[in-house]
Length: 158
Ligand code: SF4
Image (tube, rainbow, N blue to C red; front, top):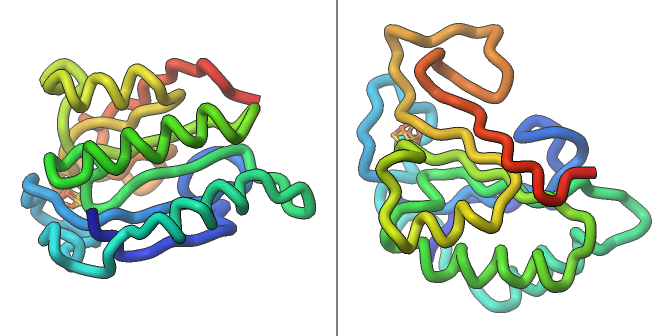
């Protein structure tokens, strides 16, 4: 898996202060996408064990309390990413007590394959659906266009 950006402190992508990882790879080709540079799974840099370690460390840093981890992109549920994303969120669940996990994807919850479903079964919030420029509204919370849905599973919210 490759990624384009990692923000150890982020207050824009999900509730509270968070760690946010923007992965590479997206097949959805949404018109008006702000992240076209992340469409290729080969874009950006390789996601390494060292970065996974850093994310776990940042989430457990008691000096700056984070509510959890955000995964966006690109698409965290792109086939090139599911194995590494699953591994990472399993670590967060096991090693970062009380932290929630948010994922943004262009896929629809109802259409997920078993591998993608396995990931979503472990997380707290999924924002799903492609960005549709004709349905874009600037005041939507956590969404770019009104077709997208915020699904709250809230297994681990604080
Ligand atoms: S799903 Fe997101 S990253 Fe992918 S093309 Fe659409 S807006 Fe861009």
